[in-house]
Every structure is written in C-alpha cells, then in structure tokens.
Length: 213
Image (tube, rainbow, N blue to C red):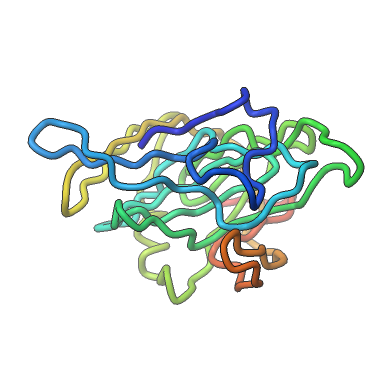
C-alpha cells in the first residue's frame, strides 16, 4: 500500500468533487514478485473546504488472518480500514472531530496514527495526543480485538500481513503514552457517495487520565 500526501497535507482533498485517487491509498498485491494494482481507498465521509485531508501515516492492527490498519487523514480524522480484500477496502471504524475552524482552513488534524500494545494513538497537529480503544462490532469481534491486544511491543514494531492474493507489509514505531480504557462515542460520518449517515464503527476515543494495560 502506498499513501499519497498530495499537496503536502495542507489541502482539502476529501470533498465530494475530489477524484478518488487524490490523496488516497493505492493498494497493491505482490503476485509472482510483481506489484499488481487492486484499488484506491479514501475515507468515505465528505469533508469541507476547511479541512486539510489526505492519507498519511498508518499502522497495522495485528488481527490474525485479516489485513487491518489504523490511518491518519489529517482533519479527516483516524480511520480503521479492513483491506483483507485488496480490491474492496472498507472502513470499519473511525474518529473525527470535524474542522478546527468553520470559517477558514487551519492546518491541523492527525499527522500519524500508531497501534501499540493494544491501543491506537493519534498525533494531532493542533489538538494534542489522542488514545483510542477498539470496541466489538459486527465487523470486528471481541475475540479479534483481544488477539490483537496480545501482540506486545517494546518500542517499535515491524508487522507483515499476508492475504489470500499476495503479500503486504507495513512498519511503524509506537509511542509509550497510556490512557483510560473508558470509551467515548463519536458522531456518524456522512458517506462520500451516498451522502447518508452510518454507524460509527469500532474506534472510540479514550479520555485522558488513568492507566492503560
């Protein structure tokens, strides 16, 4: 998978009229030692002109038998993406605060997201560090979340995920911050294609304070 920080991450590239390939992930399989393009992925909600939004630093979530990542999208928020089927990646969780300003584009949002010892962490340019927990949904079971949490790391991780059609790899360095495991809710995001609201998915922000396991 290749990310595209089009415009250096300072532009709005997730609006309804923006091409799917602008600032998107390009997902490939490795077949017989060669890259074969499968699909583009961009977060499904429509973003405003006041939100810089392109794909940026992701991290694999080590769910056995699946290819799942958490990825930063600047003011597009954090997105949990299942790309096990590389031709049909789908968002299964997210967190999105909305624009910093409703009047003008103020540079901000998640520059990076990291999975580390059972939690996801987002480095927000303008608003600090966020810690996230995963909650079970129809798309991600409690057993899968527990299995991912059992993969422990001391500092940095290098994870390789193998799918049915080929091989994909990702490397990430994890922060050492801890936070409470009490989840918060998030508001639904609007679909880029259908313009309808949908459930929030598995990713929930965890308020500061307390200790994480």
